[in-house]
Length: 337
Image (cartoon, rainbow, N blue to C red; front, side):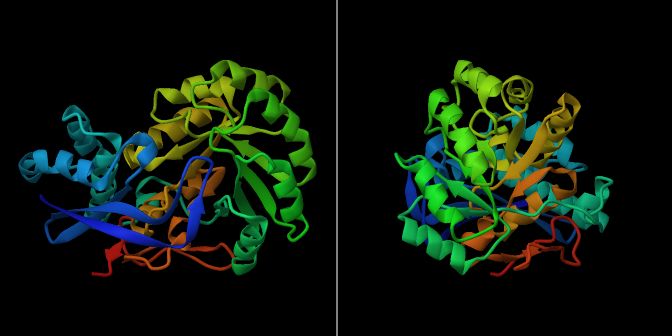
């Protein structure tokens, strides 16, 4: 099995800001795995919060490149176990795991959602993310992309006022992501005000390790709360079920589709909502996420929509939020160059 790695710098349509950082470009790693005339593609973006760079992922994978090439590939799950045993970071594993799933689907001649026994007749609509910015900039972004569900990034001293102003200009559903910027008291205070403004749920309002605060929020918030930074890997799901109403799974953080499928199953077993989110990936990563949508309650897969230019073809999202799956097996991905 041949492995190939390539770094891309993805230009964003607009400066993207959350409570802890801003950026105009997104570094990403594309991993390709080839076998028997087929090539699968996977992706993992760099992330300063988790101290992951494209170079660090590349170095990890190159260190075991010869072992990957000699690996007897039969299923993505066995390949994932092999990668975990090599001690790679979850981000590096994600790039390879997504490529392995895409390759496997192409070898089998079927899209992944079909191999998993699901169909794409019904699925949730992705939200479109509006990063922190001056009100006029946030409004301009909403007017540029009219949408039915917006994820609003917050974490300022005027968060409720921001939502109140945005509500004057749209009837869309709002989801609020504070990216760990609030306290339990702020969350409980803000929740009824935001609920009256048409907010559906709050995502990760507290710091990732503030479990006592989240327990207080669970008992007093009038809005559901979804874990993000508190839910990284499979072992986090059970604890999150005691402190949140749902989880947001990120493929890069958990290590790809293989563990994500298990996390979805566990969350459903525990009776909590399931969301899968993106990390401003290109169409390579978004097409992998799209294979999961028949199994999800919510999805945040607008990463490629936030880019000025893309690097691949694959799953497309129309202006009405409909997902168009390509007539290609696996994740349906092909690089443009």
